[in-house]
Length: 150
Image (cartoon, rainbow, N blue to C red; front, top):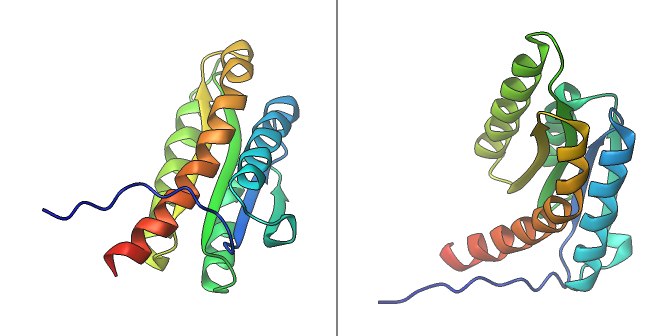
């Protein structure tokens, strides 16, 4: 049996990042960890493009435009949705996740979804560094995997 091993070599990859500006402390933490991991894996700083949007619901539209532009090998969604007192949390969490998945499937460009959905700010802060770095690894791995199965 032939097995395709995970490949985390980011050399030559072009990565687009869409980051929410809502919950700025968490989103900046996600971004810092994500970019640090991309650079550590060989992605050149000049090959990383960042676009910021007001909130998590705006992320999929920009991802769609980036994917359709065919300038990026993979995309990364960064954001934080923290539970409040209303049903709005469920709407934003569910719709942002669904739409990110829809863009990925419609365009065939891998998208690492690191839009955190947590009950508290403290949970989001505790997860931001790990999830930001994981998003970078997912993006790189998926590009290389798709090259291997094509």
